[in-house]
Length: 163
Image (tube, rainbow, N blue to C red; front, side, top):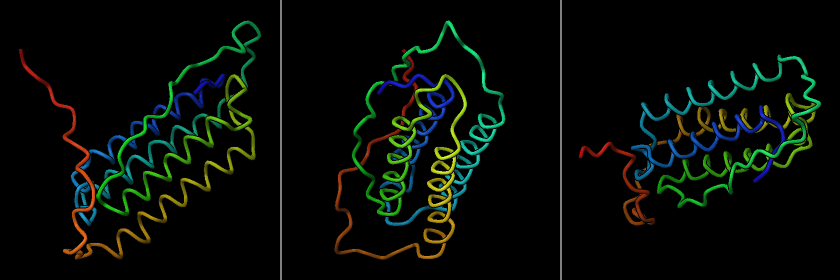
């Protein structure tokens, strides 16, 4: 995945990290999303929206020598979806956000973002937040003993190994 926009590159790196945090959360292997994980995900949304607002507020820069320079973000890692259906849905929304950012017209600019791409970002993050606050917080936990577990565990998070 190549972009030329350093602001969008920073945003995509943050989205990928959020996706990994959700995938490795305690709730990923459960049929409900814990209060702590809901708070965490809300704070992740706050953080990328704050970064995005900062990005939008910056003046358009004039990088006549640097641009166009490809920023190689590598391919989006294909990861197993979490057991938690709500988090699986949310993970897919973050995948969609990453793709929309990576392949939008603004990704070819050197900084900043065009109005229609800004609107798309805000619509996607608003949907994710509405899902978190309007669905997950109100519908869970669910008791589904006959169909749970249905997927492999996503594995433990990173841990420090002492030599």
